[in-house]
Length: 155
Image 1 (cartoon, rainbow, N blue to C red):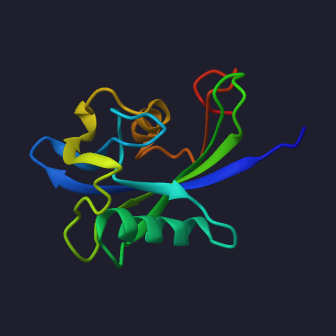
Image 2 (tube, rainbow, N blue to C red):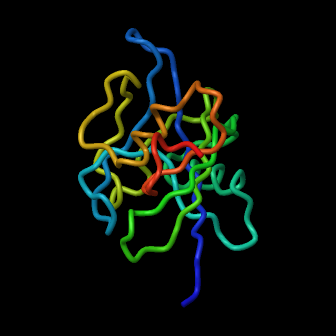
């Protein structure tokens, strides 16, 4: 049996709101994964020969129609689904507070809504590993794990 690790990049656009920091989220629809759940407004697989940083930039343009995204690396997450037969994942999480253009749904077949949400009051349901990631923003953690038999997601 071969072992496959699938890399992905996530972009959380952030802004200051009346109730603290807000994050732009999308409601997933028309996809085979977590339809009806809230998730990063821009995210996707890193393609062969592409860096995680370049993938984040590309996804922000493809999914939100924005460019020149001023990305800040937050952390990497290694995840699995606790014994289910899926490939393991390595996710790279970025935030941005500056970009060019107004974020909009570019792929309406994959996203039903975009919404600015206070990080302290995330909508439900959220994609579980992304809810965990958002709870770790602003911490000093640079490595997270999710879905393994560990406590607290840290090594």
